[in-house]
Image (cartoon, rainbow over all chains, first blue to last red; front, side, top):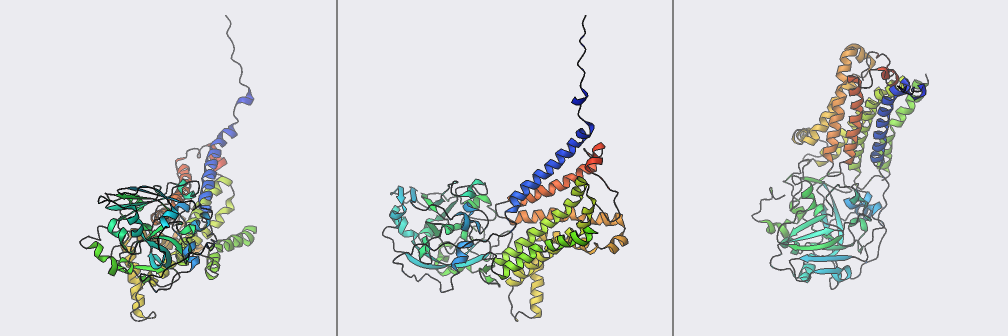
Length: 322
Length: 231
């Protein structure tokens, strides 16, 4: 009977004790290095504030009317309005949109109209603008983050556009959607918010003469970082209601779930009316810093537009409907 | 000699870099349209970075076996306190002072009273601020007992125990940062991961997983701890 002798394990096959022991050390060191490398990648981007550049000046818009709705406060500088932007589709840092939206394509641009209305379908931006008189509206702009600016928007009343769509009696709210093109909008690659960005207004808010669709700034075509080619301005509401780069308008019966409410309903509501008496959970809304100033200003109820809009909310508990 | 005479001054000057840069950028208009917010954010983030650096020294020393690293720990810790204090002062001035009413003018006793009230109320009322303030407060006794004389007076063991407070500081710091951001939590999470890794090193050392055995002599080339050194 042949008993096969197992082959001897060559001494070279045995892992050297030193190496074997070192393996753990190696894994630990490697883990540490990997975490450090990942951390540098993510944190490195904020190591130094980047020098953002203000938007290039664009085409001058023709035939702009003045408006009695404009404030006579001094508007913020072009540089401020075009380098300090909350536009998460182009990054969550304020200076990122000014750099990452530079090559954003705003023409051709289509707006789709849908929902409870007679005139459904896709419209070119040119058709949206047809027959509209552009006005300069110098509005106070109050961000929910406690800063504010004065901005000379160029636009036209949203009501002019709504009439064109012929909403039915079932249209109680209007819902807007921002473009969600991850090829052009690097911010969409991170699930920071639920994309695409969505906002809404009650019909009476949308029809209010203060509510405008914006196409320009300082008499020129709207810079990309400010929401070109078409954005909303509702001056008595916090900045996040001012949806940018609108591609879709839908007339609906039920109150839409806007993006920030979806993100944190205890912090951001549907109405988002500027209200110094209702605090954000993490900060007071009683004061605000006007960009360019040191001492803070008192925040005004409805951002100072109370005379025009307070009547929209009679009987509504603004503490609960923040 | 080389370390104390050359390397330490270099690291010291480099650690002043962020504040020097912020002052320069602020004066030359190279910050954003909201420079006060930049100052607040940057000083806060640098506090967290120096805290992480402080906590990284012991693991790095063990990994590399380069013991002189320990000579930089106190400096890193004090710079964390320095940036934390700047952060707190920026908040007091840019956020609280700037938001006051000045019924009797700016230079008035009421201003001092109102400022104290405004800071106190904010710390009491807003958990996010409470956490940040607590984090800063825990650094005060650590900075105060950082001198050789204080180590001697307290004794190594008690000093070590006291200085474990820094683990609390850094946890509160990360929580404070995480609470601040509106939606993009990637950076706070990353700091959390860095801190967790630094904690893990200590935990592994404590339980001896892969470290107390033969490997420890290679990985944790452990020099006997002198008094006044904790890990």
